[in-house]
Length: 351
Image (cartoon, rainbow, N blue to C red; front, side, top):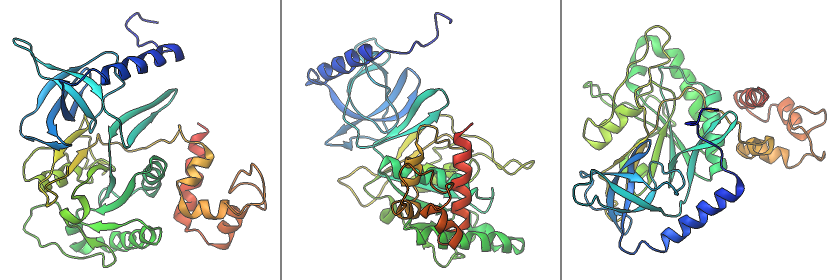
């Protein structure tokens, strides 16, 4: 192994780091509270805060992170010291307790934290690139297991006005009905400022309203590359703050634009609370290696209900003959799209 390779900490070392961190928290009376807006490897940019509310969202302070701290991510609430005279950056001294954390699974490694203190996962889909239902369900399973609310946002609804969009329109209406029936809010939106009016092509989906959906919350946008996550942030924030990519004309899967998770504050009516949105790196897959079979079922509400009635102990739900969940599949009690997602996820867990 290269001497520069990151070595894995043993249990004793992790305990000692945790104890050092607790001690640091007890000795930060002269530190300032802040919120991590951007993460750049060993350095971050922090916004000064007071009572959990940013003081000036237009001023970011570059800081490095103490080596004994856990991984710091976008959305973290921290205690920090400004740069001393002639120093280029301040210091993150302590990480405050998180209310939630989103992690990206990695093969052969522990999940990597991506963002923290998230109130809402906003899953963005669009007519183009075509929605991948299996990916939608992966995000929703991850949200359920993280204890974070989730909602769907259908962007680029102006594309549904095109004569060639009849098939896409029918598919999206079907998805809206499916996820509404499962208890997830679904909104429609148009981030393009192309002069076309916002039209309600999807009658069951609510029109997106900033204050109603995002007011007083820290939300994260997730979804396929090319669905317009950065364009949404640009429109909601009123500034050209996020990179905008293009759909690949070769495969319509989209190009990656955002490389680091970044937090943007929003101007909402919730003046006494943080209203912010995080743009996450575009990913086309969201693996669930870190979740058990039971975790996956727990992340699928209607599956959990049927599996709870199964008469077999340690049943391989949806596979074993006589299983209550398999019976639900056979009876058509669960939507075929969700059944296909479930089986695809289980298969991918074996790889």
